[in-house]
Length: 249
Image (cartoon, rainbow, N blue to C red; front, side, top):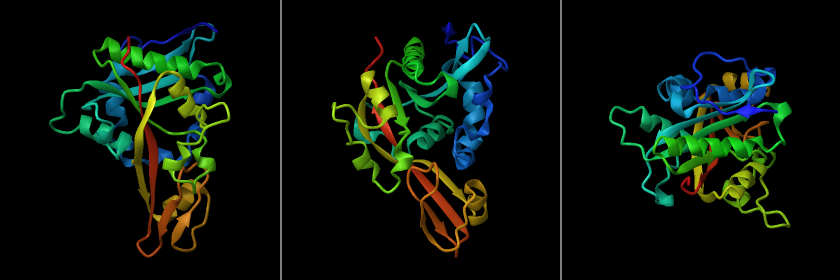
């Protein structure tokens, strides 16, 4: 498979995507209703096209992976990475007077199902860091969504990130991939994505019934969803893990 990794600035316009990347179920349904990204994601794509890129398969002439990132500002102190994670970074970048960026913040990397387990995720992370360095943003920070955490929703993220395999490597595959590329865990972002909704909306998004107020384990969620029937509100606060990659080059 011959791959190129052009940015949207280099290859603008709509590109053909492999079918598995076009399916809405690539994320749990509730993830498509995060207010900050619903409101600002399109602006991020259009206004920062030079930081969005594809894994382009020359043989198939289609996109088999997508990487999204946004310039950010950080003073280098792990403690100051925002508890609000990705939501906080995106909102700050589109505020009225955003500070000058000095790092690149990862948003997401999506890889077609049939192209996983081919080390493409590592290549995508490296390409994201290269793009940042080319634009003068030499450090890549990432609010990582551990991809096995939804199997352990009752375990606090602070404990989960300490789990390691017998060989000493991190238990979670996505955290492990970042660590293998030199990234270190800085802290947990306890409210990286905030998704509110009515009880009816959460029932629609999950296909579950919530007959009483309380904490509910929901497929695909990293922590329980809090349901308050008296207020007709469901709230999901997704924790992510801040990881910091060494400066490119």
